[in-house]
Structure formats: C-alpha cells, structure tokens
Image (cartoon, rainbow, N blue to C red; front, side, top):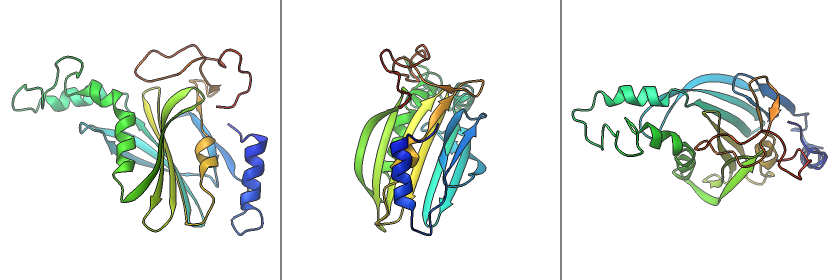
Length: 227
C-alpha cells in the first residue's frame, strides 16, 4: 500500500523544512495481513485485549513515534471468541441469559454478540476517553467497512482513529499529534489488506465481517486502486 502521488506530495510538504522530516516506510505484516506506512520501523508488542463480554484475546501492537507524535496499529485476534466465551460461560452459577447467554442470536457466553459488536465496542472505547469527539463516521478502506473517530484531547493534541474487522481480526488504527500539528490523516489512510499469500486484496462490494466475504477484485467500473 503506497501513498498516492497527491498524498505523498502532501506528506512531503507537511514534513519538509523541519526536524521531523524523514522518509516514511511501507510496512507489511504477513502474520496479521495488513500493510501501511509508519514514520519508522514499528515496534511490535505482544499483549491482550478484553472484549465486550470479557474474553481475553491475543493482540499485537505495532507502534512508532516521530518527535511528540505517536502512531499505532493494534490487531486483535477474534478467531477463538466462541471457544473462549463458551468456556467462560461454564462458570455461570445458573444458565440465565444474563450470564450464560445461549438464547436466540446471542450464542453461549454471548459470543455472537461480542464478535458482531466488536467494531462498535472498540469505537465506544475511544468515545469514553477524556477527550472531545469531533467526528464519528462510517468509513471503508479497500472495500472493508469500519468506523472513524476524531478526538481533541485535553492537552490540545489531536487523535485520528479508525476501526475495522477483517478475517476475524479487529484492526485499531490510531495517530496522535501535538496541538497545532497537521492531523495524522495520511497515516490512517495508508492501510490496506493482505490475503493468505501476502498479496494486496480488495473486494468487488462491501466487506462486513457479519456476512460472507464478497468476490475479490476492484469494484465494477473502478480501476483506480485507491480505497
């Protein structure tokens, strides 16, 4: 995933003539199936992520800094959500819907609600921060649907975040820059998806994790590889 000429030119203009000027790198993670641009080789940290219904899921954080600006991609693996929450439900003192779930669409341990609500829950965690939400919108990147959130933090810094779900993984993209700096929109827009062979992938129609994946390829009548 490379910046378009216009985006690259904009980034050069923003950074030129300052101590922050340096060439961003194109980073690829075949393990987590994404590609994107960072200001330097990101540090990879193994961690965990607690889902809405209490599942502790494996996650990795890819992070880099440039001066006082911070950039990260957190990838959470939801592949075992059913197994984890089904096992967790066995500790319920009684098989009530509130604890055990299992009725209607919820799934045992509410795993279906947790999985299908992952985008909304991750977005809500941004909105809970001690910051002013200035934008909340639906977004797509290379045909994968998700949410964008813009925040103004108490110290005046700006955060631009995006949340997507692809191939049972939750992707949380976050860039924060000091007050007065250009917003980190180019970082957020640089990400794309990889298939099982490490090749860039997009879909002919909207991809949403609640439904079967549509055919791969550019949408009809759209040859431009942009998102």
